[in-house]
Length: 300
Ligand code: TYD
Image (cartoon, rainbow, N blue to C red; front, side, top):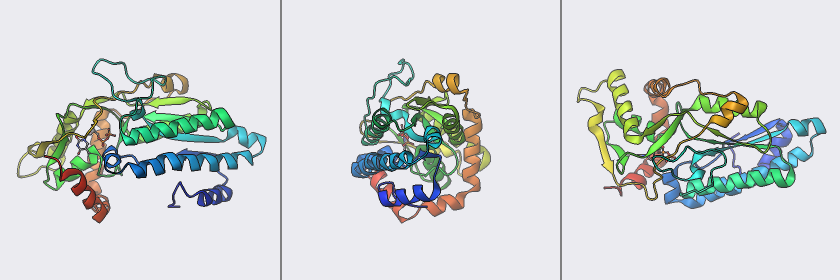
């Protein structure tokens, strides 16, 4: 069902019809650059949408018998960005790190995390939350760093690196994120937060060079290495310098570990994009081109 999480009537109807044992709340506006150009959508979907979903879930949950009520879960998928930005030698984010969101996106996700927490403490709704690092892999929308760089390289377009390219992100292959959520649904404790990460801190420029090297190997371009397309552009305002996740709690308590290394995951990702260029072409619709104009035309 393609619907709007702010549409309470629709959600009530779906819950009544499907009687789910769990709700996994992935629905969010997620792109920092878009949140800078248009924060209103982020407040609406991430804050009001989460509120609507929590209220609908609470209504559904209250109608369950005691056994189903105890087994029910509302899992909230969140981000490491709520914790703010780290200095080069700061310890990685643990679950007790203070919230210091810096972008409209991360502030809206922080607000939603607080709502989820409050619905547990106030109403007893059996919630769990995961705060995950940057994902990558198949079907990643080409507005984000990795799929954008692959799509631009294959089109012979510039590879726009913001600022000095030394910003660090902690990358996790998407199916490892899914297995972490599965582990939390199976054995996570209601009210608990789990940080999920791949122990893969990398500066952006290194990611872009890795992508160029893989493309040079898998789809060589007669014009030379794709790295010739790397172009440094004006930085993102308020750009967080470093994110890093301390994933020891989920490893210790739930026995979760990522299955992919960065090397295996990034190779699978490039191979997937090469084999699925139809999908990329399909999502590069008119609205996508408008976005590229808005986000990149103003950068020197
Ligand atoms: P992004 O995929 O937008 O994720 P997030 O901002 O949530 O971490 O960006 C990842 C990093 O890549 C981030 O530091 C911004 C940088 N970046 C670029 O340098 N150029 C780009 O064109 C994009 C989209 C991102």
